[in-house]
Length: 112
Image (cartoon, rainbow, N blue to C red; front, side, top):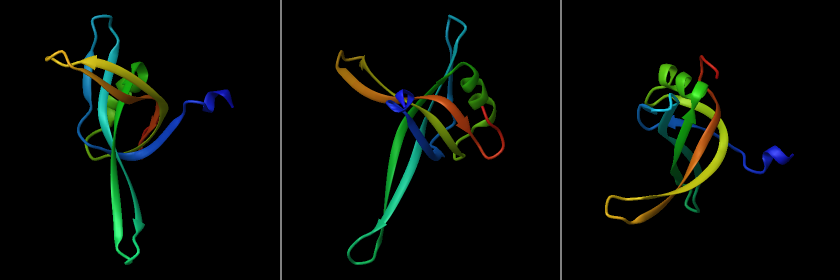
């Protein structure tokens, strides 16, 4: 059960083509956003849909798989963990973001 302490599983659609970053160290990083949706019916019977956007990062083998097989609009199932971090804007303002560090991803035709 200790592996379930920081575990995320999402199914959604890519908001844009993955951004590939080849680092000087030789490592490959891929970043993309994933949209998940949920819906419910309000008191008047109207369907209400909520869309949520998640920032995803992947490294190594998963990054190479995503670069080759995953495109904008495609539905994927991924597993990973929450990874909070901070960064500084060009104006020196400190920002905080929580990303999902992808450890496994599946599409309708390929698996990594």
